Length: 73
Image 1 (cartoon, rainbow, N blue to C red):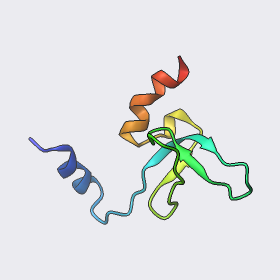
Image 2: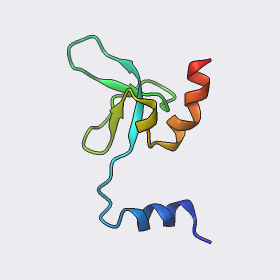
Image 3: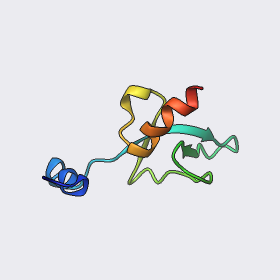
């Protein structure tokens, strides 16, 4: 039986896949900063390591996926 961490490494041998987060908060100061739904405090996404989306079916972050049903309520 493989753990989630082992499965992630076997699915991504080059470690270059970026997780897609659900966009939650967006800045209006012209910097185009986006905070993910899974962040406890608003933070800017590092686009070199992470990506964001507005489509629910494209979200790959497990924490964002778990919060999606609560967001719609």
